[in-house]
Image 1 (cartoon, helix red, strand yellow):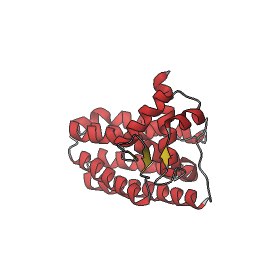
Image 2 (cartoon, rainbow, N blue to C red; image 1 turned 30 degrees about the horizontal axis):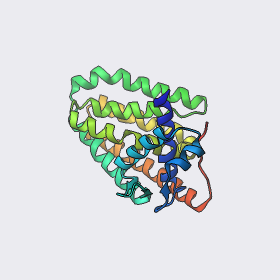
Image 3 (spheres, rainbow, N blue to C red; image 1 turned 90 degrees about the vertical axis):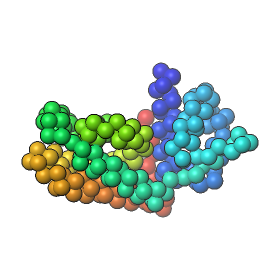
Image 4 (cartoon, one colour; image 1 turned 60 degrees about the horizontal axis):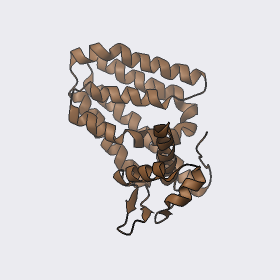
Length: 223
């Protein structure tokens, strides 16, 4: 229960910072946030520590916490890094490892399709798909780097879910084409497809952030 509260608080604050609802230079005050979110100060304190590790906030020596923000350039840098990381993972993928996991990758794609039929988007399945691409490399350093950024990826996908729902069928097809290219032994083609897929995701996210900052499409957290 305590972990669920922490995760909820962390996701909420991270999303608000990325959307610009907390401006650069704003102070995050534990007491005020605890009252607003109706939680104790413990989860707030833990969430702020995680946000500091993610470089979204900075804690001063006087104990005050200031928002550093996460703008369009930061999103582009994150996706550039993600493209490099995931594409490099593909270069270290053995045929045997792919064969062992091929059915799982297609299972994830089927689950994406099922969610789409319900007019939903399963963020966890999307992350599981990309996480498996990295894990199949058997490179623990790459896996650790990807996992360290996973929650940021999750928040960005969450932010863009509403904007991408109309294109979800094509987005799912992107995932299928990547797996099909790997199945055919077309590593270079798989890398090209993965890069294009993530570049498009980056574009969706940047556009959503800009719209939110202009007040054109305010994204809020549900439930």
